[in-house]
Length: 440
Ligand code: LLP
Image (cartoon, rainbow, N blue to C red; front, side, top):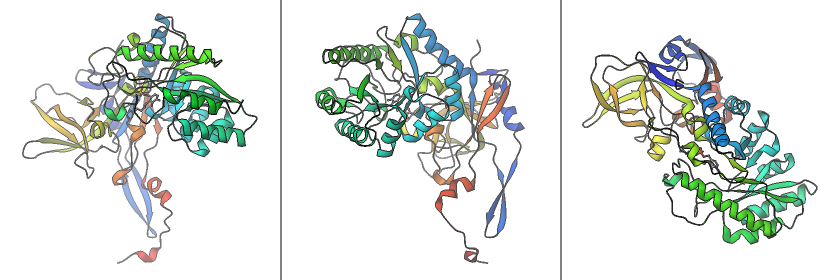
């Protein structure tokens, strides 16, 4: 069928919605801000915003389920909340059949519970769990990943002292030994051996001894996750083999795990050309959990931004837009590439190469370098593949607000997140305005 985002007669569509038309239909709102006993009025900008496609979420979950069926895999599909934690997206994914959530903070756990995931279907992973987070997890029966010797000690101490009667199910987050294959990921998203995540198999015995000190702690599974943006299926075959062997070794010691979690990390094609390698990646072994983030939500959204103007420097042409690194930090943090398209293409015009940059006071503030764009520019640009690690990594730098988010379903759309306002950003500063500060 038609992809969720496509051009038709030079117009960029999200499902059946003309994106440029959507922007133009958004009403201008006025924002009243109380300042020094008076009100200052400002217009609320309608751009930038994230625009999600429900069909994309449907396609992505479906291709996982299809692949599992094709390979007769006894599998479960999980989702890594960090990629995108919008509660509405979590709810959509749940209704599309995502069975488990992988979380990395207490608030992500609460988000999972809020949208109705059962505690036993939520995994709490992390190399630096805080006490309140561990308590939250144990009290509510959330699965815990054991990441290190000290993590095992913490879990033992808190469960033994504070919840002696509660059963605690844990997974062992293990680093496989180095192996020959292509985890061609950026070093910042490589989580394999010698990263700060998981423990070396040399610590296995010590960790098991600690966990065995409290009979209520049960080893439920093994967990491995080697990195993000992995395109080589061999990586997963290797991990599947590794965790399978490890489960056999554990079984010899009377530890019978039920779940083999082989992580997430399957890459998507940011260039938008090749098919997803998903089905080749799935191993045909035991009961496995996959916990992707990016490949479920990455291509489900675009970042719609308004062109503010163009300018040239000595060796560069710039398009300046109203979005920035605060909405999408991937290009400046990892040098990631995102396609950038105008929402409208013209028939007769020249093309040029531009750096697409935002208004933030940092030279690192770019969304794309050397992007081929028409010289007659549309009013709006769409930065593609912004469903994962865009909104969830956004910041308030330069006092910029987190963005509005819309979800398209067929020909209709609705807002699933408010744009932050000045009051939202400053509310936590505990500042009591004294009108006498005003100077004439
Ligand atoms: N499971 C664990 C234990 C993880 O650490 C991650 C991601 C995932 C699953 C999901 O990985 P995915 O399928 O989304 O690749 N901010 C970076 C990506 C960081 C990934 C961190 N861990 C980026 O924007 O590329």
